[in-house]
Length: 526
Image (cartoon, rainbow, N blue to C red; front, side, top):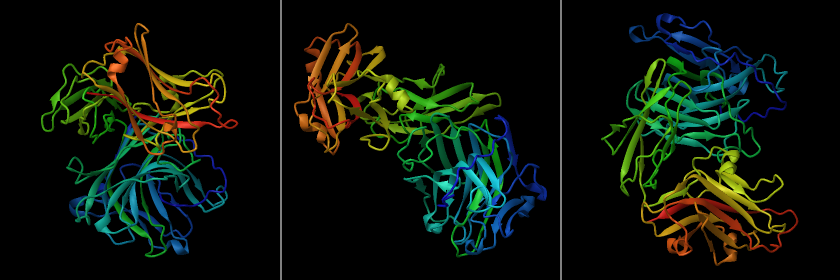
């Protein structure tokens, strides 16, 4: 749904039925629908040349064809959808066999999850065109650029409009794409939502391509248009779609088979380390998100090709494997168990670096989450600490630290207090390192870091360059561990770390100006 149609009025999305934890599956075999609840809306709904018909396949393996014969230039459907049921799912795996054989008329096709929609029969509700108008997450299988450039991508759609500022996509390897694939759209969580698209040779077969996971929070994410609809979709119906917005060639023709929507089918999703991470901690805490159906799990962990079951299995969704070898690749997998059995997870891989993170900011879900951990010292209900996904040094998230030191107390600090005192001696570190980036427009400020142990012994180290806050590129500040130890701090029981800006005197910032410093990748380096 790439349609860049401007919606000129606010439309209330159809209220779906209550959340269901059931499943539905449609095979189309026997030339009939297994489900009596199929709906096939399209837009614009004008000429009546859009069709959804069951076609005869080899050996009785019938399939569904979504087809439009009229050009978009004369009012043909820009896209047509199929919703198998009005059941509203939250965590869901939508799957289907999709045939991508065809010419340039096969612009886009794919899967829909957590959709809510209205049918505007005459265009009066939207003031644009009659037909279906939807909010949803979708997985594109993109044939628009021809078989040599087949790719899969993810989109968040508001009233048929793509609100993505950056694409989350991956090119499908190889050239032999004039064939069928099994597509899968995995949606888990509500705050944030984790959306992943996968393409397989066939259902249950080898993986062909997988998108990076799109993490949707209730804030403005790095991939979203500015001032767009930021709130996540927490539930909705599942479906399939075909699409062609170009006037020539006319219409589209896409076939689907074995379509399913499974509430007990979604895979778990890694939070840390991210799949493919190349500089993970040698002392990591594995963290993942499970689907709503999961009542238990089995974790597998090891080097590539040597996964072993963790015994006993974790009771929650974290696991600390201990100190790992630096520069070594590791794999892990989470199999979720529920009322209907076990869902085998995807295999994830990461490679360790040589540092141990104190805070990489990857585990925070949103602004409220990070402000609960990093507490600033300014009274009056002001917010100065934010989670930022658009300006990062490593990974996908960083901390945005805003400050107004033209007002008392002329120093702004953010402090993280660890629930359990941290032992910083495990890897015999030589330095405490953090990455930072400022702005050229910032007023010069003093930057300091304070470390405190469980007995309230403190060490404060000040960056000697007040103009550092004006650095446009990312910089790394390495603080010698000896400076912390010499101040009497016990490295085996670190309770707090504070980042501060200002020296207690008026900074000279103009009016209500807020200066900004971005912080990322606070770690211990051996």
